[in-house]
Image (cartoon, rainbow over all chains, first blue to last red; front, top):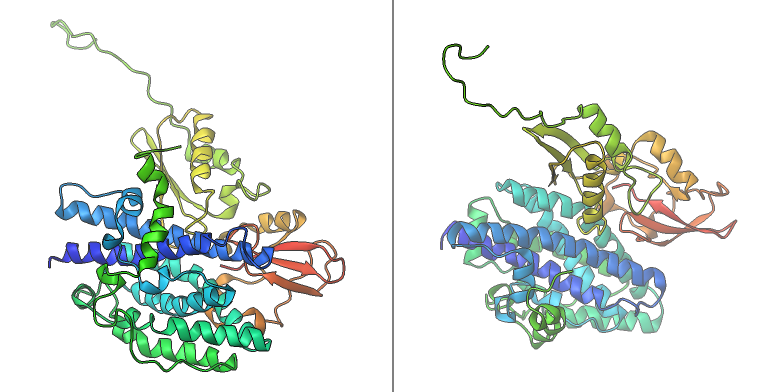
Length: 260
Length: 184
């Protein structure tokens, strides 16, 4: 695989994960448990959408290097079908209750921060500057989701039970984050991308420390969705992604090229 | 006399394009308010990173505060309008990501005005905060005083306020909610 093709794929993984999770967080508009949380959830989504746009814009520019034409960020976001999406499975999981949303965010934020910090040293200057910018924002996301895991875990019996259940249910989708495939290995070798395997140990350590402080149990399941190299990063998704895209892409599908 | 002895072709002499001095360009930009925090200008906010003439075209380098800031496109429009007003027709607004924007770039006089507007300015330099290592549950020692009554008896309500760059607090003495511009 040529390097630009690998980079195009890799940038879609970064961008799609941001965009899909932003869409999930946007579903909370008007449904947050209190107004401050409604605003916070959507502000996190807004940061991710901004980062996703930067990754997808760059992806389109890279695509133009090996195809006649590269697609714009909008064409990539609104006109690709589910099988062309490269987001992590974790990002497409439904919101569930507030505990599920925060557990999903917690697992992802801790990974995202490690990933962006690694990418801030990328040999590709464009990748590095987007990562530096993103890491500053994601540090707030990580701080906030960590606090909610502790607050709910070390809260009432009900909140403790729900947070434990959310962590257990989502655990099986975390292995994919650290499973490297040919795309990631090629880019890690070129010092453009991060080797995801190296992020696993610091992630488990960070996650375990917070879960312990929250008086919760670290999940122990070993079998992982997508951990075999056939998951979201390769375009193999759960049924949830199609429903999400149906809503997200509706306007451009129904009225192609619509602008305002 | 040009080309004496030969018939000179008629020459079209165009008036040189109006190129205001860069100091005037900066003055014009200093008149552009941030759309979401209109008491400070985009120059005071620190997002205008440079202006340079490229031939007849003025290149304005702008960096976003937060990646998803919805005011970005409006800011670009306001920049063009303010420069058109001083006669600059050809403006390229270039998005510059690096170095990433920091609240450390907010002008000192703008900080005072922020407080008067009800937004507490960042209390420390962003470079000195390891944001990943702190959290509200462990950050009780960070005092963000109320912008109205100066009470130190305040509580964090949410890490995100009316915009991504602010957090929401409440004063436990005068009971007013207020925004805090997060060190970033």
